[in-house]
Figure 1 (tube, rainbow, N blue to C red):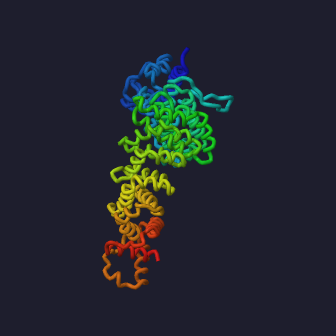
Figure 2 (figure 1 turned 90 degrees about the horizontal axis):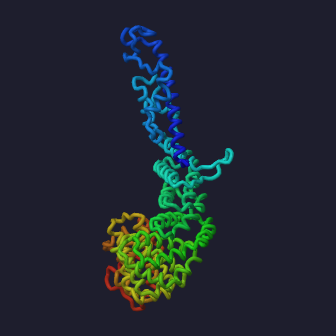
Length: 547
């Protein structure tokens, strides 16, 4: 029995042939009308030509005048079996080729201007309309109707599914910022997602293609547009994210990670129910702890770690099976040594999600080797993304005095050095900071507020000239060589300080500067004296600005 796709192929060939036959007949009748009013090229006679030639100087074709010589037989013999799969432009060229001497006054699509094709200002582009037509030609192979009402897209044929996914892929290539809100795009959303959900639920060989299209779909349509369909997409993806096939797992995990990362808070409860029923956390942990024993690509482990970290961050109730798993903590030790920056970021995010739970934080703090790797991620030798996640995780671990004491007893000097280096690195960029550099600077300043806890780290801050660092952050444009400053009155000093504060481009850091300076002052030794005149100068100006 022929498959639906083959039936569709045959029917399309027949319909195209009939359409071209009608076009041929229309062209011939128009040509005959022109023959009755146009002069012959040989004798310039109007009407019938006595020389027996047609108006173009070409001998008449007997097949045009004989009953069986033209029409469908002639057209069908000149058409490729795959005619209907060709582009509209090539179809038009083939139609005109049937009568290359003249097309009877009927212009081709290429010759017609936009107004003749019915395109008005503000309407969809011809390219998008073409992609839309091809999309629905494919979707109609699997769409079922109940009367005049469309019910659900469903198809078991793998080749049709592959054809549909390729059509969706091509359509999404035509969607950009300008066309995202086009009516053709809007009306296609639910049908595209319906087909993709059905393909994902089939769990066959085209799953990887469908999962990759989910990521492309989010990027093309925008996440806010897909909010009504998120639950439909997350359900099949959660079942496939721990699949035994590597390609399927990587694609589905990446798609699920993207959807959950941007999830609307109102849908968290419903999504967590799906994730809990699919037992995804336990399955992800199981795949991770088995990773060293199985030969799998780094991309696989990176996607799994990233997804697990996102789930733990959003749903606190999911954390217990993770931090309580001793095998997983050993896996984190092994993963922490990976030099790949992307892997380091995923590792730090997972540790951060675990540390959000008090018991999880204790497990991380109790692992000295793991802790050392986390501290090293804040060093300037790492990428900005790795540094950023390292600062966030260290802040989480040192949120309370107990955690701060534990970390500082082991890595006091490296932590202070990493903080000071990050806080003064902005100088090397001439004050022009990117959004990532600003984020890193803010995280370093937040971590520097550990000065609120007593300890030997205060001595390291003073040794590494925290006074100069805070001075530069608070008053980056202040002229430190202002010689007669010591001779000025208190009111004049305050006036200069306020003027410098108002022109600072780093004003958003003031709260951190005051907190750090205040904490350093509170825990300062009673006999503390600035060692250098420059140090005394910086402190005097800072205290004047705080007046």
